Amino acid sequence: MQIKPITSKEYFKGIRIVHFALVAGQVFFALITLFLLQVGKLDMEGQGLINVFIFILPLFVVAGIIASQVMFKIKLKEVKKKINLSEKLIDYRSALIVRYALLEGPSFFAIVVYMFTGELMFLGMAVLIILIFLFISPSVEKAGNDLELGQKEKQMLADPNSVVDEIKTK
Image (cartoon, rainbow, N blue to C red; front, top):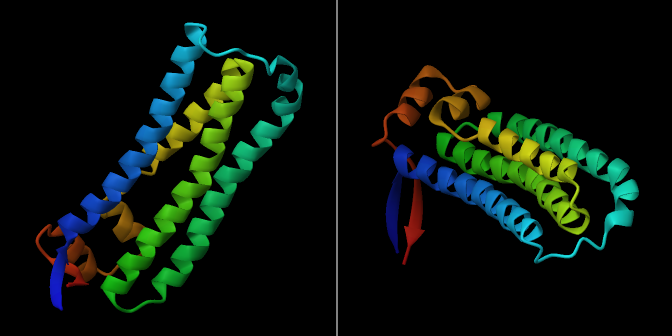
């Protein structure tokens, strides 16, 4: 078994790829849905559902936004108790993924509701979540602040070549 070092650059590259893929998936799904509705390839048979979703979807979106923030802060509180930077970063990545998942669900739901109803307000809710996603994109600075790292740990993260973790390979 070999041990492969993971540098700060590689760690953040991995997180950025996950973040980008989640944002891109939402954007592409929204654009494809918008295009198909504009060219008439999708039938909007859910017009009667607008009255139902006008109340349900905003609640679901707000709940997703609040839950993502609350769960992220709860997870961060646990991560900050760790002593080892490597453990902190592993748990930080998990906290980010939970945060992203709690936002992505309402976004996709809003796009699907838009697909069935053709109501642009529902697509707008998905766009709002996508904008939030862009605002919370991962970075070295945000990680340092979120984790309340000391100066030495922040310097390690800022140095793209510093080893922040290791993985065992076969």
